[in-house]
Length: 252
Ligand code: 13P
Image 1 (cartoon, rainbow, N blue to C red):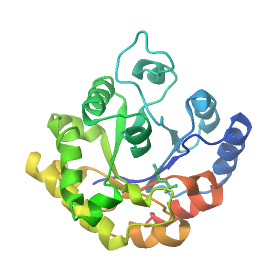
Image 2: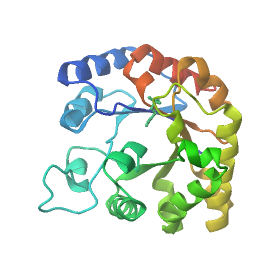
Image 3: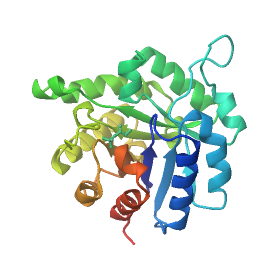
């Protein structure tokens, strides 16, 4: 059975005080036991966040990690550093890193392999741009993104992988994929995994949708059979909205 997940990607938002108060607010709220809840504050606050969520069901994850083990890479953060403070999961491949930091499939595969071989689980993000959807290339684009990275991995590593389909045109734009568009792509992604591995692998991987999810549209999107949850940007910075989105993904 695959997991239901709602993860907040806080991106480059919130200083120490805001990070602390948002986590304290989240801890006061009731979540639903059938949904795994994750938050990803910025690097400087990860250890504080881990200490704060102690004894709650919230998991702290990282937004990124570097592809090299260690060395002269000024400004970067390694897998080992994250593991040493108790981080066990990271986002990799977010479109903002692909666009603003030029992370291509080759670099992303390096990151994925290094993370997984060191027991740092991943939420692997991908998705097409607007012109690619408009030219009806979105399925091929997504297939290529997967074939160049995670579909190269050994089958046994798939239990450490969550996928997040985030169409770039829906990120931070207020424009969401329709539930039908999300379902259609998630079903296609599962088919790609089935073709590369087997039914167990394709059925057991959680596939999240990301892109302008709000309390008002979450229920409809999460109700689709191949959508196992969401990766939430803007709406995860508001504790109440985040709680409502988690509720929308619960069957309890
Ligand atoms: P928004 O929810 O702000 O559109 O961001 C989505 C996202 O990029 C999550 O990683």
